[in-house]
Length: 325
Image (cartoon, rainbow, N blue to C red; front, side, top):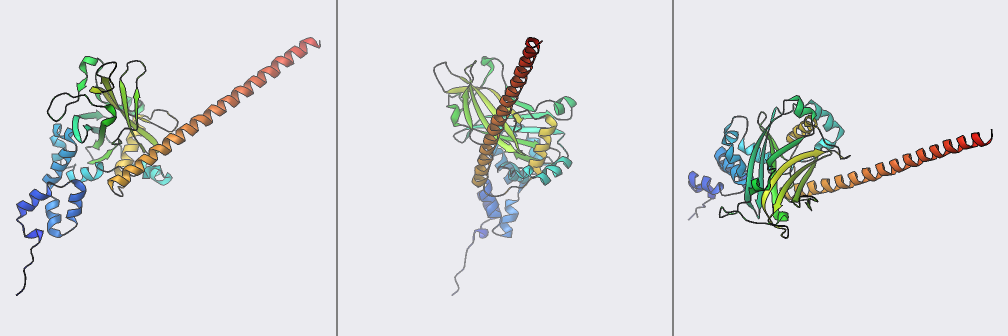
């Protein structure tokens, strides 16, 4: 008597769809490669829309983004979940990046996490077509509170404000081009530095990735609960800036070209591998910046010595001329 074999595809389609919606993005993508039936179920836009909202709660304030015809939830997750490869640093890629159309509008989905729980979410829309934006140093503010009383509290699981250590905060800053439907994550998940502002005493938590040889740095400014405590319960500012290897601010147009190249670039390897690669790029950038700064300082010292020598020779020549008359 032949023994019947039962597979997972023998389950009702609605049960399978419910099970797939409980998977994370990489697991769902792996399941879609198993069979044609699972691929069809895993391609459901509602499943990927739910994954995007679970990963980036800030998108809940702009549901039209995931419902528009230009933005596919599956494509958005595939673009923004992993770190991008820095293929734009190659000379050929830079030349191709110059030909890419720059986004006419930039949507930033910003989420701050504490131990895996989103504690602060914002969506910022930035118009990029004005000449002022294109020529000025790039800067986008997701949260900006000039007065301490207006700082945004960090809300925990219970919905109440909580005090957390700034170093325990994780950040996701996803830049989205609504016209092309492409996106890129421009923030490291974990902080690369935690500093204290010398004047205000606020804690500055910095996150950074390197794209196209430039550093995208997102800074979360936390106001301390008191002068003695290091915990932070409120966020005063969240901003994103870009600088090149010489420490100079990159203009809005230059940043848009970097973003366009990163959005169109490949995504290779797993999330952990790409995170390690992004970390190595940042460390290489810091070393290169330090080397450039030291080289510039040495050149300035050499120029000062040369100027001093020329001045001394001129003075001595003048004195000799006066004495020998």
